[in-house]
Length: 128
Ligand SMILES: C[S@@+](CC[C@H](N)C(=O)[O-])C[C@H]1O[C@@H](n2cnc3c(N)ncnc32)[C@H](O)[C@@H]1O
Image 1: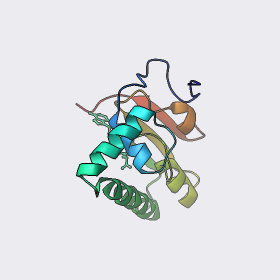
Image 2 (image 1 turned 60 degrees about the horizontal axis):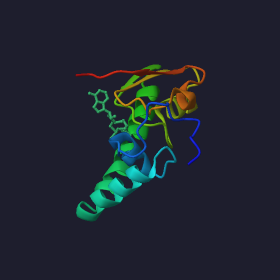
Image 3 (image 1 turned 120 degrees about the vertical axis):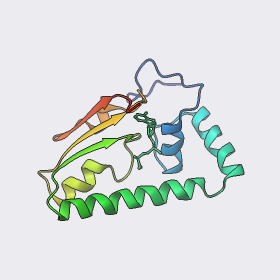
Image 4 (image 1 turned 90 degrees about the vertical axis):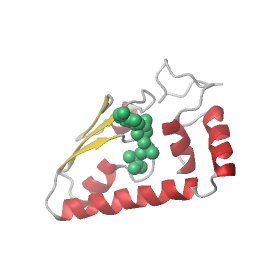
């Protein structure tokens, strides 16, 4: 396997990670075979799980657009997951280019290379 540019070297590709499982359900590309296998095994016993993930993501997008419409320009996204489609900074900056976002997640695979664009940063950390 060619090591993907987005993955930090400490990532154990043989062990599923919930952030990457979620990324797989959303149609993202930041996941490995172990994540895909786990995602399929979970969906086999909980078929609505992938749909719930997509619905959650759609809600996130609507909520961010609403907040921007109310004048919010700074976002702290705790438990951000892996950047995939419709990231907070993309939605917020689409509505207001001055929006700034800090992502926080306890999973180190969350890759700042993807989100560390202008006015978006990532920090590894846990809220617990
Ligand atoms: C289901 S994903 C949510 C992704 C995104 N917020 C969304 O709504 O689409 C949950 C994320 O929370 C992260 N997480 C779980 N426990 C956490 C903690 N104690 N501190 C920070 N992040 C945590 C996981 O690594 C995972 O990426």
